Image 1 (cartoon, rainbow, N blue to C red):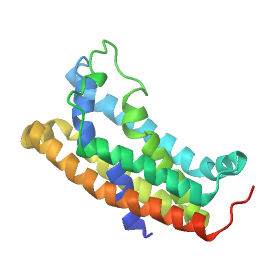
Image 2 (image 1 turned 120 degrees about the vertical axis):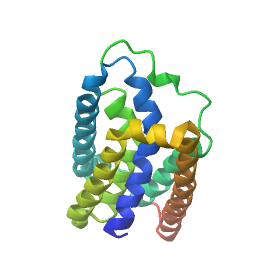
Image 3 (image 1 turned 60 degrees about the horizontal axis):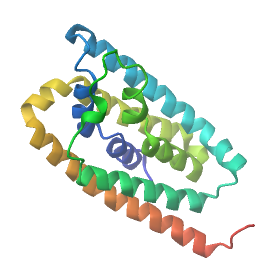
Length: 199
């Protein structure tokens, strides 16, 4: 996997276009003058969490005795489920609404940006080729920067595309992620069948 393909994968998993509506809903009670500051803070926290997980993921797998093929297959399944939610979004997005206080870490940084699928993806990249950690860090940074730009401009993008346009783009991203998830699962399955299970 190249840096560009890894960055595209992470961008699809971070799903900034799908998060625009969620961020808007979660920030509806935050004063307009503070929204950019809050979004920037939450995105920085999410980036820090993803970077930490990128580097502690491999030792964590060794402690839990999880093999690379098992992680690849499980990561493919997780991404597939996330992709299905993108292709067939829930009817309502109210789980991020109704908070009277300013959001802090939850739900914007976690799980909207640094969610289970994003954490599993960075862990999987690092587990495959740990020696390429500078490339994975670069890919994560590129995906995060593009996602940050989209979310900071979320209000304008939302007005320009409208709710239907955002949903349509999220479904397109979901279809791409489905293909990547299936490929990841099949690769893990092939590796598992090729090598005997160590018990």
